Image 1: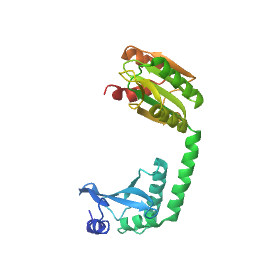
Image 2: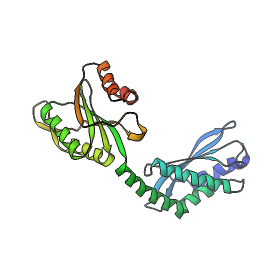
Image 3: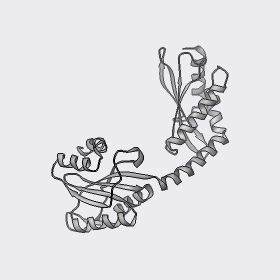
Image 4: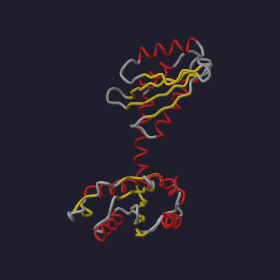
Length: 258
């Protein structure tokens, strides 16, 4: 590992000295250095971005590997920022460059505009894209009323799905993601069931087991909203096989045994 790399890491720790700003993740003669810097894009009210730089043993003769993550950005946006940083790194001379790359990111209007544009694109795509979500319910005591409400909401929100009743109570939903989110909101805000004392209650124990774009998940498009009872794990497995979602079932199975 070059002396220049160690000196750069020391300087970086002094520059990014705020709480949680800098962290040395790895220091290895064989694998090199790995540092994490938490930066901000867009000023005081901008987005927090976590940057992971892997300085290989031959660095700075070769550019660092870079990883980008942020709770305020989508995976696509993080990927775009990472690619911009890699392009910028490739264009720089072979000398310590991490600080330059972080400053470039903080000041780049191109990246800010790219984030804003992709954010709008993602919102529009989310409205059009079909999603699949599996929800887990705690209990259904007032069965007729509960199921009637579920059926009504799926019709109103143009969703399709399955309600699987057994040891675990599962709802499989397909449709526009905003509509699925509205379905979940209704579940938690409307008195859909009764508690152990017979008093009307809301579904506060609902959990999202898994969600993904329908195009990237297993399974075919569902029709309507159907209710199916099962008494054993093999019967539940068969219910998922019937709608061609065996792979999806394997993904959620561990959470059902919790």
